[in-house]
Length: 519
Image (cartoon, rainbow, N blue to C red; front, top):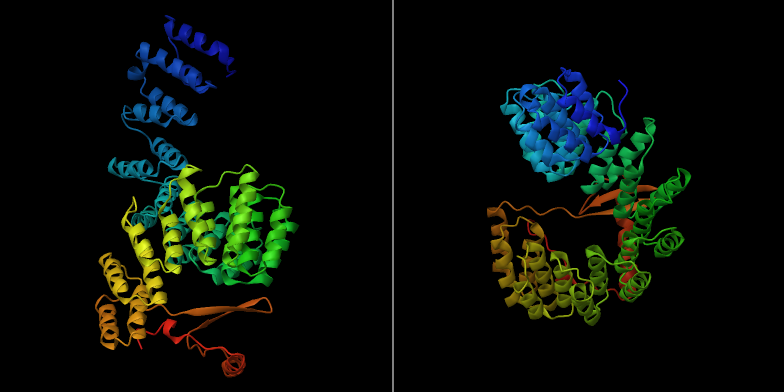
């Protein structure tokens, strides 16, 4: 059927609906679908209501609902949807998809629940968007229930459902089940590979990220921007400069380097790998510099304790007309903290709200507490925490507890530890920190008390480890680890290094060592 021009559509629908001649349902459906603008659809809808055709032709409700969804008018679609006598699975799926696409994730999951209550069966078109909503909300338990439904309704073999499961588990922090879901997929596309690589990278599994990137390339799947960003993030976290250079070359070869997010990731990678000159060079050569790029450069100087340089970059950013955001101030305050710039840190902390209209957030307060703590202003830091406009979390109190260890304030440390433990945190570092403070004061009975507290609360100490890059390979060593086949040679070399360090005057500060609270 040839569709009429939009300018004649409304008058045509009015004449057709007023006509005494019978109008076919197909004609009215075509009129609705011919609307090229939401205003046209609303006027045709008004004509249908005026002539009472929605009640006589319920199928028009479905068509009109879908048309509203095509224009992203979700609220209008919801109103009509409630009037549809027996909506089809297709209508349910379209609504669930629209909600998930427009970040109305709670609505999407509520619709999924209503779909089940209606007696209809979800299908392979339902699950990808319901799982997407679980991923966005980090609803792991609900995501696991959806996984059971996927199995019950026979949709586990679908490529898009499988990729959605991998993505959901990855974004909910369960990389183990993400990997299991990935391994069970008979076919794997770029989306599923990228979800797995990104999941590893953002859950701290940097070695696995790089290994999976290699496997993806071996399988013949070409990397996209997201997988490349994940690989660069992993290289930075590992300090794997050689691998990072390879990925930078890959970005140039594949045409990703001009992408502002990729360029920013390269800057961050070089900075974390200790090559600040290369980070600055990539930053200067970037065709476009947005707030994310400027913030990455500020953070780069902060990593290396170059607070003055970070401030200089911040000033250049403001002069360039780029408005800082929350992340910018977090990086700037962190740089001030690592450089011991108390006055500058206080100045920029107040500038957040006074000049830039960006109210301080929890992470800004955390940086300021760290700045004050490093400067020995422990009680000022405590007062800042207690007068925050939001509830402090354990990380803020933990930062102050660390400062108490540095400055030897046992009384304040005990009060802060009580605040931390009231939050029911299972972070072993806080217990170990308090134990070390007691040990430095030879309070061995209190050390034992903290040990028993950890046992009673089932808090286990996480093993420390280090990463070393050699010949483009990253090696991981745990505390006391002798699993490497060359362990005798490695430990012999370490002893030689330690002896040379002592000859040069190195004296370890054992009072700040993290004593093992378990052994």
